[in-house]
Length: 85
Image (cartoon, rainbow, N blue to C red; front, side, top):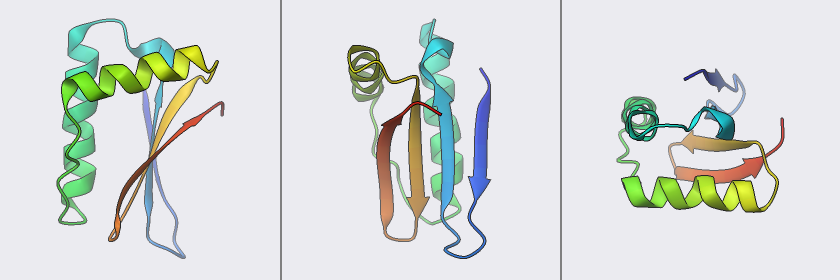
């Protein structure tokens, strides 16, 4: 699974982009949760995203013809946007 992680130097927020097409097996979902936990940990946050929730996010992105999940992480919390990069 290819993941793009970037940090905005002005706001110090991190963005983690996961392509919907990369979610093929159970391991892909678990790997995504592990990556989210690592990035959120840098901000002393618990992502509080469960496996079933992540599967629902991917399904919703597919239904809305969006090609990626973009998690925005900063000291305030974690937000999710469904995007087409």
